[in-house]
Image (cartoon, rainbow, N blue to C red; front, side, top):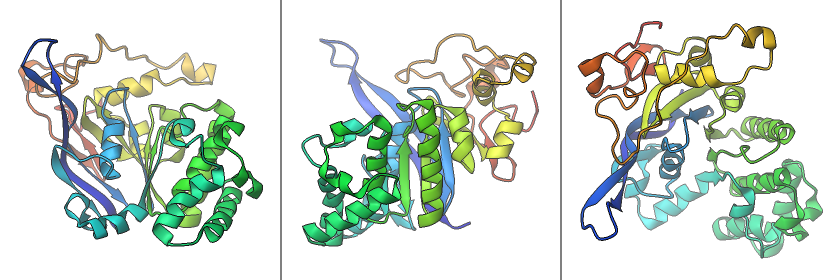
Length: 326
């Protein structure tokens, strides 16, 4: 498959003060040396605990924040080395759907104005044409065309997220970063939004980076899945391989913690309990970031940097035990 988005050695460090009167600075390593590719037309799921760096990586890949180091290529072009004119063209092709739709929708603007704004900016249409296109987009995402005259507060959470999706589609993007788009919604509404995103992907040939902490959601929508821990990718594989044969202990722990509705299966499931808390990104463990909580800790061997090792087609793991079943 043709690669649409590729990033190499992405780092994002934030400088923080170590105390009220201290001049010493520390670095919060939100994303630390991440490389990955997203193929055209696929959904790459990204999972991990809160604070693992998922959202920061998504913002970097969408071009909304600059990395401390590293390169991001979209359609073969380094998006952080483009001229303003070239960057404007790229902006049309990359959009983002945020976690909380109400925070991302301007409460003082009507729905029609919200969706029309990027159309007028990028497509150079007049306000009437843009408003008509906004009405069409609302119908595509399952709302009524006359909802363009309403304000965001008049909608439920699920409806507001549909508006946010319509806005993301307004300038015909090819790549969408969906940052926890269903985590704030009721379970029944989640399924509707996920199915909508899948339908839109097929209809418009979209590519998604789908960020979530919910494994069941990622399993439903993704083709490949990357697992992040403390700013690093620790495992990445196609969906079937990851769920049927997880190799990294952290991936195993995430799958172990996922709820199973069938009691007969749930009672037979072996739980993998992790010790301790997730370390601070200000002082991450040396070598493998997970070694301080890992049940398979091997001493000095695990305190060395663990690169991603290929264990199968499209299956990569950052672990000394890569290739072995635990």
